[in-house]
Amino acid sequence: MSKLIGPGKTVTLHFAIKFEDGQIVDSNFDGEPATFTVGDGNLLEGFEKALFGLEEGTQHVLKILPENGFGMPNPSNIQNIPRSQFEGMELEQGLVISFADAANGELPGVIAEFDDKMVSVDFNHPLAGKNILFEVDIISVG
Image (cartoon, rainbow, N blue to C red; front, side):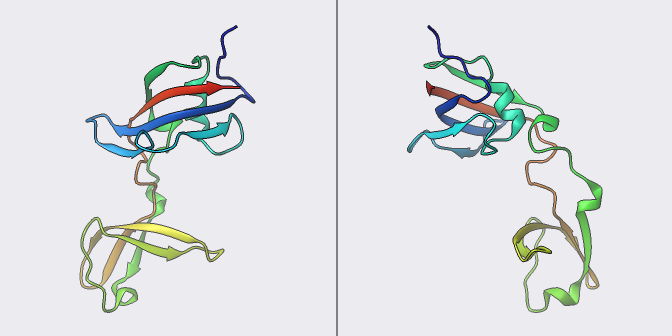
């Protein structure tokens, strides 16, 4: 009997998350495989659903569209903050800075642009709006 991925199944796999140009964002192919149970929240739902029907022992490269992955960028997630809040910091476009959210958790923001008065910080997920290639090697399904 074949072992197919579906709701409630425990899956062990090696994976790589890549941009369409092949640039690797994250991968565990050089280390220990990851194990998760479908529906436990450890993997984005769109990534889980892309795995449905895959069989133990198979390898695939799956294309994940933004709406099934990290979402589309939201313009309201770009905040303008007075430059004075960054006193003594050397800013550059693309710099990732950690901010505290309302619950005192860590919230990364990317410097989008800045001038002498204001700094525009993008709090969208860095992979928002991007097509993602999800390369998987399904080791076991239980």
